[in-house]
Image: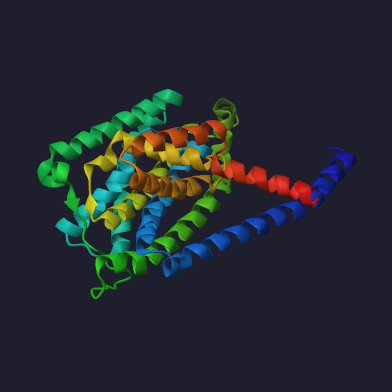
Length: 343
């Protein structure tokens, strides 16, 4: 490379470095404000709305994993409700049938169980791409849904299995009723869990591993030609996504108090896809925003009309059609306009 070329690269890096620092500083401020709002939310919001945040936490964690596969690896799964259900039933079996009370142990075992199931599913599924991958994951999801109904003694059939209240870091909180437990210690535990898993995922997608996934998404043949083991990277991405979905499933089950077979149904997988697209799968924080918007929008429509499913579908379809980059895309556009006006 010529001296001029080196000088140009150095100059570009010097110019871009302050811009990158400013972007990171702005992002840190926004995330910090969001965390503060969520931490203070139980102090000023009604208990009903606080309980709505818990499934939003659960889906936010699940979608962090789902979007690693979809947004970063380029593989769209229509069967990831399978792993959410595995997490939910893992929590139910461990707490109700095996007497495991430690929430930390339930999270770990349920997550690893989902990974164990994801290995054979992933080994077969990552051989395919596009619609073939989606249909194959959908088939496995429906197979597990049928399994939950057929093996009644193990899964409880259509009634599911009760999930008992776990201990948090060894504390039982026996003096608290269910609602107080959920909107108190359990709420803050889940918030902390979301922050930890979110940070881990941020490191993953910004690591060399994450860059390899992006390269595979953009051009898998070129990546393979350059020596990237495409199937191996896709499989690891699939396993990580399964683990995150199972963690989300555990939180959902404890919040509801029940592991239900409908958690594994294909429409639930569709909701995962919809929340991701709603928030914006091209942005790291998009699926998290999509989870909160979806949960609160669904709740408000359910309180207004018995035809809430129709209006929810229309509303979400309009948002996706009019704003294909999702809610985060709209936010980024508004921020860019404000910066241009202030410049």
